[in-house]
Picture 1 (cartoon, rainbow, N blue to C red):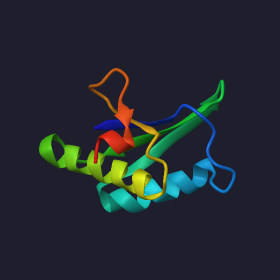
Picture 2: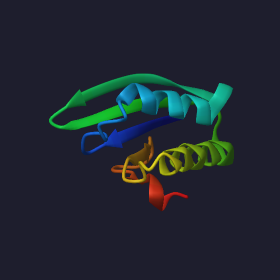
Picture 3: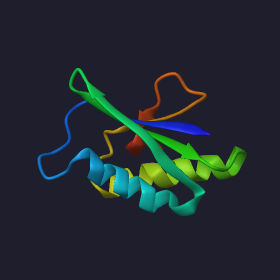
Length: 93
């Protein structure tokens, strides 16, 4: 399952997108990986592929959201492929 991690504003000065990528990679372990990234118009995103389906995929999405919240990035949106806009990570934990 594809999951897009979307930052609608710049990251805090002490954090860069590579830090968020490392955080997400740690959160999903060998059950997925960050496969792409981009920036533009003051926004940034990371593409994550989760190697499971159904309920297990939803648990991994929640794990990604929890990692973002724990890093004080609860405002970052998490958008699984079946959703149009996604939700802030803080709404998913």
